Image 1: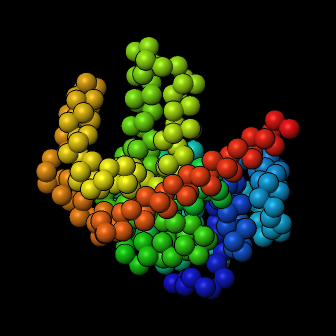
Image 2: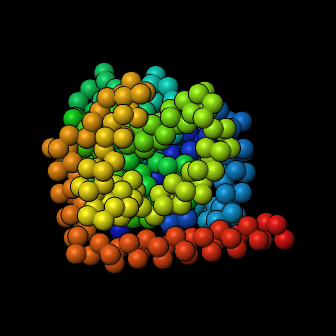
Length: 313
């Protein structure tokens, strides 16, 4: 098994935008990278895009990246395979089938899929291959958004999962292990919930597209740039998230029911969420954390104002 700390070559299967973005990430962090695409004409475009992205990041590591239309060459010596093909199950399964035959049984076979669960990717490939397959779904672009969702199937071997988590951490990412397969994982489920409501608000004549974007970029998005929804709610109400749920839960229940989604925050669920938040932040430290939030928002506002001044100037 390739240990983190050893020199690892990452094979990226697919030279589209996500494949190039992963190449930027891994090359910038010192990995040797091979990018494969079956379409020869795609490789010059991918190479050019890589150079542009590296320049944007102020990085000079293009020599660490090579491009090839030969799969065997791409995975030769690879300790990690990141599949970045289009969102088609047949294409992804074909790549995994072929890559599995060309690599060591200890090498993780990881898909960048945005929604396809790993058990579907592994279906019909046999237990030896299924044990190596999982999803590593990034935010886009991964060289600027460090979160990556690591999603094993019930058949994925635990050492493979741990190897993927460790490698992503060594590349400067913040992996989140998704504990159960679900279409869209966490990232797109959260994103989808907001988009569904945004579309409904436009449809119902409540707000325009730009109005909704303004609410997010100047309100929700500023807080969410350094806090998640649970911490936001926890710090919004004295007494923490339990108090927030008591005050706001009924209104959110009515809003959900209006859209045909009746998912009330039951006392048991609120207790579970509260226990997890209190394990992270004791209520005795709530005031200090609120002051931390305000300092972060003040700094963010100053940075955004300075950037806007540069754009105008």
